[in-house]
Every structure is written in C-alpha cells, then in structure tokens.
Image 1 (cartoon, one colour):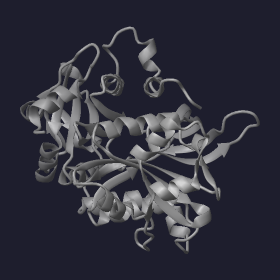
Image 2 (cartoon, rainbow over the protein chains, first blue to last red):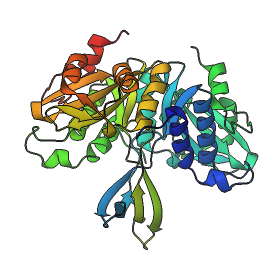
Image 3 (cartoon, rainbow over the protein chains, first blue to last red):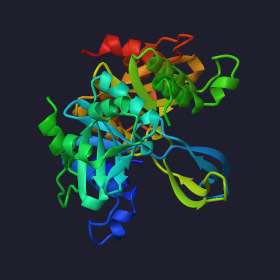
Length: 195
Length: 195
C-alpha cells in the first residue's frame, strides 16, 4: 500500500486507537490515558516528540480463522506488564514514563505500581533516560509529574504501603492543562531536565 | 508485593514472555523474534541496554469475567501496528528497530513493511534515534542490520515492490550469531554509529 502522505496516515492510525476521543463532547471527564494519547498525537503533529503508548500485553491462547474475514482471537488473557506504558524520543533523549490515576484524597496505594515497573524505571534511569511518573489526583483535579528518581528513592526507603498526598505535592511538578494538550508534560520536562 | 531482588524478578518476568525458549533444544531453527528476545534478555542481564519488544496491538471487543478466575478476552482482533516492534535505550541513546524475516532467495517484498512503520522510522531518525531494520535472510542463514536512513532512501526513490538481495548485501551489515546472543545487533551498532 502506498499512500500519498505517509505522516498524515500514521497520525490517523494513531487517532483511531482511541475511539473515545470522537464521542466525547468535552475534554473534562476523559481518562488520563485518553488525555495523554491526545497530547502525544499533538506532539507528533507538531513534530515535537515521538511518544506512544505500548499496547496492553496479553497472552493469546486461541485464534479462529473464519473464511474471508479477519483472524479472530477467541481466548486470551491479560498479562502483567514488564515495562512502563509509555516511551519515545524527545530532543534526542530517550523518554519513559508510567501514568497512574489516584482517586483517594489522602494517599496513593503503592501496589498500583508493579515491582517490574519500578525496576524498569531504575534500569532506564541508569542508562540515561528521562523517566517519570504522571499522577492524576482526581479528587484535586490536578496532574503531577514526579521524577522516577524520587519515586524509586521513596520506594526503597519506605515500609509504608502508600504515598501520602503531602509527599506528592512536595516532590511533584503540576502539569498544565491545555485544550490541545490536556497533559502537557513536555513543558515540565523542559523546566526540570537539562538538555 | 515486595521481592528481595527486583531486578531478577523483572528479568524472570521477561523470560516468561517467550515460552518457546524453554522447550527448544537447540538455538537453530528458532524464529527471529525468539532470537532477538533472547538477545535482549541477555543485554538486560549484562546491564548493557534496555530493549523490549512491544506487545502485539489488538482491539479488545468482549471480555468475560468468570467468578474467582482471571478476566478472559473472548473476542479480539489484530490491529495494524503504528510503530516498529522494538525500542529502548543504549548508551543513553534512543534505539528503535523493526525485525523481518525474508524466505526468498532473490528479494524482500516491500509490502512486508507497513507504511506506518516507515513513517515512524522517519520521525525517530529526525529526532536523533539510532534506528534500523534487522533482516533475517533465511535462505542464506544470515541476519543483516540495515540503517533506517538507507531503507527510507530506497523506499522514497523506488517504484519497485521489493528490495533485491544485492542491495541488501551492499547496504546491510552482517550480525554475528553467538550462543548467548543469537542476534548480537549491538556489536554492529557500536561499529557503525557515533556515540
């Protein structure tokens, strides 16, 4: 297949990955994942960065191949992710992050971040990545960027099962909401990392 | 969950993603994907690089939630990938590649690389990535690394539907087979890219 304009095609395919974008009348009330996807598509359009969400990892057990139609997966299971959900490239640097929503007013339960994901963040930081956590505090309607280094440090030195909201406010950087970029995390990255 | 040694746990999880590794008696005859996974696990163990295969993108339509057991996907379809299959970080640089097997003796059909993947490679190269194609020529039992820049240049200036084996031999760099690293692409990366 040859399309006249490849880049637009790639962006269109990306947009198709989240059907919810089309039916939502307002940007408010969308999930953090939708908002980050929308932001990433915008970054791609503006040629600012190339960041994608990784597909959900699943184990496929049984596939049906009906005549004249597409292969259909009829038995599969969700698998624990061994990495974070998002990665890509920005200003020549490798970027890696995980996104989490916290509905509690007081604390974020640590069990929401898998051990594998902490270890993955530890590895990529050691190799020179810009790595962080994006946390949406739904109750307060605010998104924070927290450096992976800080999350790992907390993780390594606590015996608690959660992160108190006070700690998050102290170590997190609030992320601006913009209509075209609902989670404009790169403007925070520009401020807190050296290039 | 807190494990005494996080890194080993993360690697164990990664190893579990490819069950074929365990049942195969010999390294020969394994698929290119298996060989690259094995190589990436080794890189991870040696703390040389952090590179993972992205999960296969699928659209989930129906999920069954049986009592007391794991959620079961009972209807899903394969989706066209909008990016390449592999990315990660090496010596601080963003690494991105696609892997393809070619069974033909004479040429590699261009339709095996999706337009979206070419456009993705074009984007990441523009942003400073180390990006390439790993091509296994099964008939000749040899793996080549071909720079994304060369693949894109060929793609942009050809009206043909395939890449002749002569072109691949001329532009590709043969990748060594090692028992512990069946597709040791980083040793080629070290030779042909500047750090």
